[in-house]
Length: 243
Length: 193
Image (cartoon, rainbow over all chains, first blue to last red; front, side):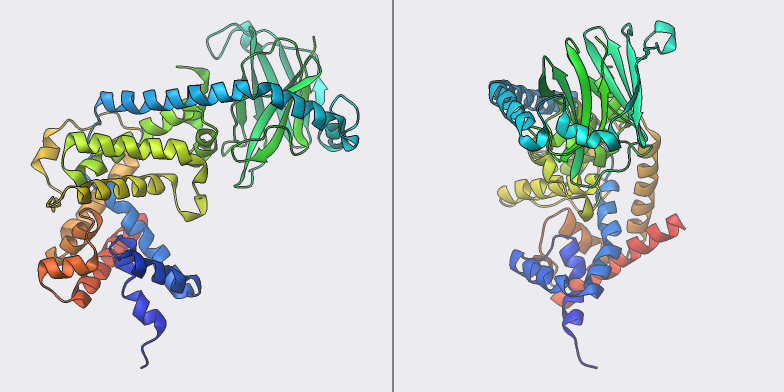
């Protein structure tokens, strides 16, 4: 029987999966595997075995100082990123204002989004109500709750002091390269809500709105991973906030 | 516990990654608390020193924090991806120390002296069950098969290096690696059946 190209590389698959091929050999195998379904299939089969190896290591409790070291560096990074965001805020506001002024966007009040409105704008129940009899599920007193839904999506904005929480339900699974980004309108200007979020397996998603003061509209769009400086798609839900 | 932290805890790893990519420190904190233990354990298993294991773990997690948005979910789970980063960093650390011999057994007295983690989530308990299965499968492997797998995965040696170290033909190393992994995979498949 003739020894095939697959036979030749198949012998090296285990070493490749274990990281035991030299770099040039690994690169050559990868090139071969691009066109060899049998190799890819065998690699998929062996993946679980290799992935299990680190799980078999005797488990240790990492020292608390390690957690402190890691998270201290992460928070410092996040703060630095926050400074950059703040310094870019003026430019951002100008870009959003320009975006809203685009001819296709209409003159104001989310017209571009209103185009979506026929399809996606929520039917808003403006009669606020309280959850839990005025209690709180997060430690602080709740005040206004606004709820509504767009086709297929239910939204609630729970006011908690100056902050708020946007809760979505029945959100469809997102494409892998998309996240949800929330936006608020305040004094006629659109601002992003910093944290990006994604629905869980049940289609629930929520995010905190740090400052609800003066906000008259909350909206959610699907954006590329990492978020956008300005909305790039029609909102999946939009909730007017009574003043 | 903050509301944001509570929310992040409800998300699967794959759902946390976009938040980490957007530089959400609370999402990352949840991610570290889920995987810091296994990451540190793997790093220690490879480098064999606590201080070096801490450095490796820290470097790996900071690397993930700064590149989290680059996770490609089509190439496996977040946990496997994270562990491959830890493993690569640990092997780099090991190689940078000339003459450092890899640890070759799964039963290591120094490891056992340390206090194991006590709080178990259901998911963690399942992972430990898998770990027990894998340890069992490894224990049942002929010594020559487990040795080449350990030298490769935990020692960072290439198959050619292993061939020279053990004084056996390269083809034999390849065969033992393959048979060993097939055996582990078979045991895992049986466990799922």
